[in-house]
Amino acid sequence: MPTKSTESAVPTYTRPFSGARYHELSLKCREGQSPCAHCGRPCDDASPKTEWAHVVGGGAEFASKEEHDADGPSDDGGGDMGCFPVGPGCVRKLRAAGVHVFKMGAS
Ligand SMILES: [Zn+2]
Image 1 (cartoon, rainbow, N blue to C red):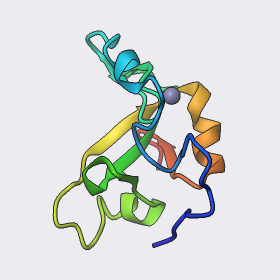
Image 2 (cartoon, rainbow, N blue to C red):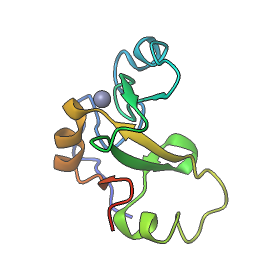
Image 3 (tube, rainbow, N blue to C red):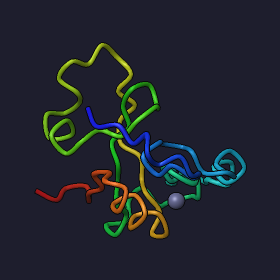
């Protein structure tokens, strides 16, 4: 799998839940909301505008498009955390970092 060891500067958008205030922001989620997979800001689960990322490795990394399309990593020994929403402010940053971000229901 590709490594991003050259990207030593924080924040690392290839790492889920790595926002500096993730924990604090995630606590603001109300019913029907989930924390952004990067920064923890509340996102509406049901909004068709919400985009998602598939978290694997026990929360250590994002699934690639191939892994997501296969419904999880093929060599999965556990650690598939499922899909988390990505806030509008983070979608572009994650995409730029090579993370597979998608809309639910999009074929
Ligand atoms: Zn975010």
